[in-house]
Length: 541
Image (cartoon, rainbow, N blue to C red; front, top):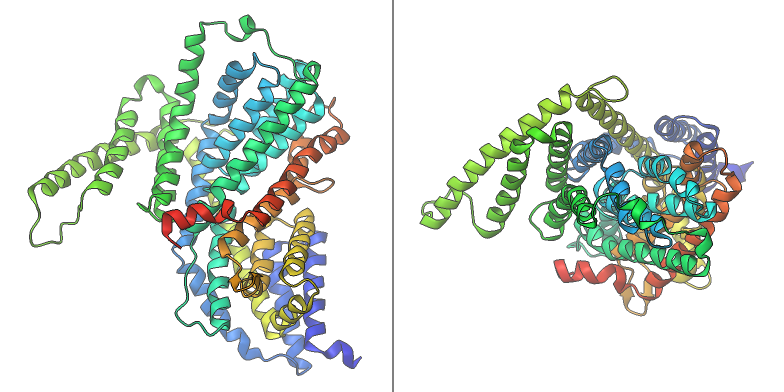
């Protein structure tokens, strides 16, 4: 009995209890906070927990409320939901299919390319998988494509939203890694620590994300070359009912808006023009303008003009100092300032028109599009933040029981050092990804293990890079969401797949893509510059 009264044992029991309750289906936030509270008071009654630890909980909530970077979460969610309602995926898939469909395997190439574009613009995994499953899977099956290849391509491409920035996963992971990196440096008596930001993680994840898309396309190309009968080309005259030039014109028209939005959002972050929160605001406004334009394209001139005003403002911000709180302002900067005022008025008018049109447009659910988007944004954002609050209580009590010291001693005592510790953490996160959403894993596991891993050396004298660690964790979670039998992406696809597609077809289809994901992890392990080169180039870290 005395063994069970040890704080480390109670800590382990608390962790297992929370995981069990989550698997049963209890609400995540209340499970984490409730389990932690019960075990905290139980530990106090047994004399192994100091309740003064709980006095830090209000400070943690205030830190969450005061975090500027977390403001990006509802803005990116709004951007993604608005683009989903704007039917961007439908138009992209239709035009990409017409462009590539005349080649063997062209439809699966289209799915991967569109999946990457949607990942960089919406970042909502479930919506992407469902949308592409509804639109492209019946077409591929009708054309005689392999069921396994079609299902695997849709599920894998749909999960790219977790690794290709701007991604909500990367925003939340970057926020947690920032704190973990500071804690790791404090533990090493470095009280003027370096910092890692979401910008760094966005830059670090860009090349690995594009590498994954390239590996997907290589596999699909090899499949098409080896089994052309299972990836038939669509007759060119059937695809190009109009002239070929019309197809390219339609494709450019479909690509222009989402690509411009991606460049504006991601380019402003990587170029140092805006923080992720500011760029997310640009994305939310841009997605609203796109949605308003799609409502009535014939009368879309104010919105198109507003788009050019937005681009002009970004250029002026980059080229000129537009601050007016100065004693002397050069003439050319004064002219730029008045041009910026004019562009701001034009942008405001276009935004107002976009909001009015999306408000007046009735969606498929019978609610106007703007209200529907705002409702979805509110629900998703509330879920994220209430889980974050519950996870803060859980990690606080976990540390109060000495769980962080226990985990640190365990990982550092493993034979094989950093490699074994990293492999074990990745395996635990991978298995947890079968049953838990990425939110729970990021908020529970990362604060516990990341400060420990970031104190370990990947080679003599070289500590683990936080950007590299974040990219590895993000791809690992993406792989977990794709792996049978419990991958979330598989459930999304199963829900919209025709009856002719068996669950076994979906499982067999994703196995090659899971192998590609594992290959990507191996490449990044042995070639860490794939993840660290771009951040070091852009931010000199």
